Length: 394
Image (cartoon, rainbow, N blue to C red; front, top):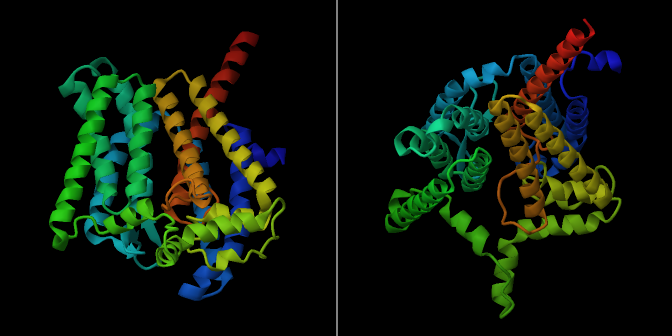
C-alpha cells in the first residue's frame, strides 16, 4: 500500500477519500441504472463499462495534473476561460439536447457526450482566482478593476443560464463568495447583483413577451419546479400536484424506505421509477440501498474532503492557490449539498449530481481534474517543507 501511495503525491487523505468514492461509484452506478436500461435499453454491464472508462480517464487526468507545477494553472487560466466561452457558444448553437436541454456536445465516432458547463465552471474559478490577485490594486476602479473581474462571471453564467439555470445560479453565488474572500468592495458587488437581477428579469420579460422566439426553452420547467406545491383544497388539484411532484415524492419515499441500514445493494425499488437515480437523484437511491447511517458517513467524507482542500489553500504562500483551493472546495461541496437537499425536498428539483459518485462523463473528469489541481498545490507544499528540513540539517 505504501508503495502504491508513493506514486501519489500531495495530501494522502484526499487521495484516500477520492479513491473510496470513485471505487464505490462503480458499485452504486451498476445498481442504480435500471431506469436507464428501461428507457434506453442495453444491460447494466453496458453502463458500468461506460462509467469505468470515465473513472479511468478521470483518475488519469487527476494523476497527470497533480504532478504539474501550480504556476501553470495561473498561466493557462486565460486560455481556459476563452476555451470555456467557445465551448459554451458551440453548445448554445449546436448542442445535443437531452431531456429538452441543449447542454451537451456529442463527441464524434465514440458516441460519448461532454457537458461544456462542467469545463466552464472550473475555467471560471481558475480565471477568477488569477484576476483577484492580478487586479487587487484596482478593485476600486470601475474600468481597471470592476469590469475585468465582473465580465467573465457575467459571460460564463449568462451562456450557461439559457439551458441550465441552477448551474448558472450556483456558479454565480460561488464566484461572489470568492469575491468576498478576495476582499472585493461590497458596494460594487451589490451593484453587480442588482444589475444581474435586472438583466435576468429583462430576459424573462422578453421571453414572456415573445413566446414564439423561445428565448428560454426551459422557463416553464423552472417555473413548475419553483411553484409546484400541494393543494389540499380539492382532490383534483392535489392529484395534479402529486403527479407534477412525482420525482420529488419518489425521492423522499426512497429515503424513507432506506431506514437506518438500507434495503441492501441492488434491492432498492424506487430507483426503478426515479429518473436520473444514478445522477440527479443519487442521494435518494443511495439512502434507500445503504441506509441513513451510510449517508452520515458519506456526508462526513465530503466534509473532510472540503476541510483538507481548504487547509491546503490556507497553507499556501500564494493568494492564487488559496483562492483556487477555496473555490474548488466550495464548488464540490455545494454540488453534493444541493443533490441532498433536492432529494430531501428542501430545494426545488434541479440537475446537480454527487461529485465522484454519480454516473457522468464530463462532470466526473472535471471533478478529478479540479482535485488534481489541489493535489498539485499540496505536492508543492510538501516539497518546500522537505527542502526546508534539508536546509536546516545542513
